[in-house]
Length: 182
Image (cartoon, rainbow, N blue to C red; front, side, top):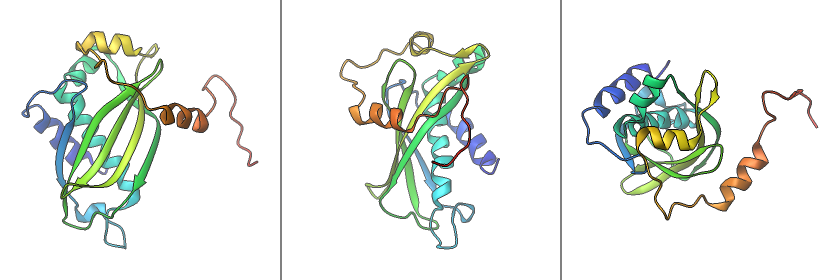
């Protein structure tokens, strides 16, 4: 809820910005606010993923996926996330969140997001996402068909992402996941 006003603003503005295809790149200009920083006076590491939600919302709205989701009762969920930091974003610094789909497999769609300032990458993340309905996960084929998206022929999921996802996966919600430290 801490980003509710910015989220509403992004959703409102996205409807007035140029349309994008599902496989296009979204760019959202922002500024580091006092509510985003920690005691070191730079963007708090915990805020990066929260702010990146705004970039994904922009892409969803501008590509038409948002309207399809709402009409069909689908909700977006993140399954896995990883981030790398290069430089710190400072208070009042202007930056953009760059968002694009980098691939998909039989279960998920993978999105890369970057925090970019002055033409340089400050942080980069990969988010493994899905859309779910009341009856369970929505297949990528159903998503692509519903939004009229045709994956580019050269779109190939990097091998390391499949390995990463397998390495960090938790058991299915249908299997036990007891809490014990090994």
